Length: 116
Image 1 (cartoon, helix red, strand yellow):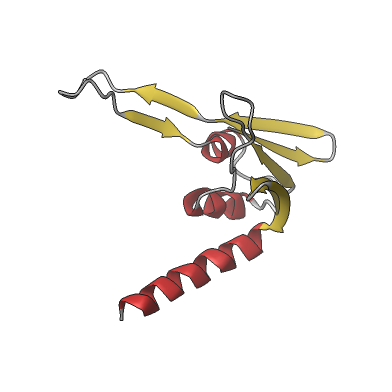
Image 2: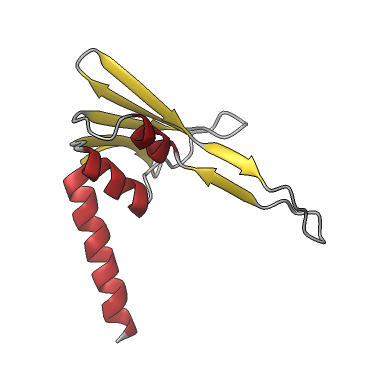
């Protein structure tokens, strides 16, 4: 996946980066550790208001869900990004990062209520 930050004529991009572990488990599965595209973007530019586009597709060319995870959404908010455009449930979605944070908080509250 790729995250592209746009502010006026400025363009900064981050990409998913996977690193394979040197150790192999007994079933020959090699664990993956990685950096999300939004974190890579944050590492390059810690403060920049603008809009972020998150895009990605599978090897067969089919678009995949690219909605930022809760941790990456928090990073975008910390950076001052106001809008995020991502692919969700077979359509492009434009959503304010503030609304994304509120949605995450509401989902966490609902999850806690279900446990009680």
